[in-house]
Length: 171
Image (cartoon, rainbow, N blue to C red; front, side, top):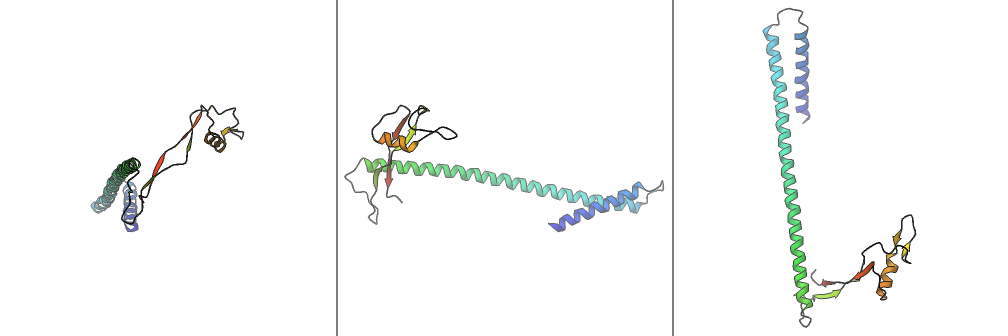
């Protein structure tokens, strides 16, 4: 690449020298050799510029192609993740609805549907002014204390516990 830069630099220098000679000709007829040199130098610079333009166009085309591959790859990942989720959900449904069937793999590892830990879901900011409010620089909820109170059976309109299940044994 440095060779190409040097050639462009040399051609530009020669062109500038020739332009200076033409500008300083003092009214004397410019001989044909100087004009030919000028045309050759100008042609070299033009070719160098055209080569760079073509090179940049090629790079731009490859960038566009790489972005297209990236986008298609991201779309394929999303599609495969959805397929995986649907397969796990369907398998979990079958295992949960048939508790008397021992679903096992070839090595004897059993598929099980087990409950998750309850997840705290805060539905509004109604916790302001409650015993769960922590005073820091910004008011935040004491999620551990709130979750503990909900697990003890207390009810709050601004928070609930979500329970779910997970399928174990597929990995």
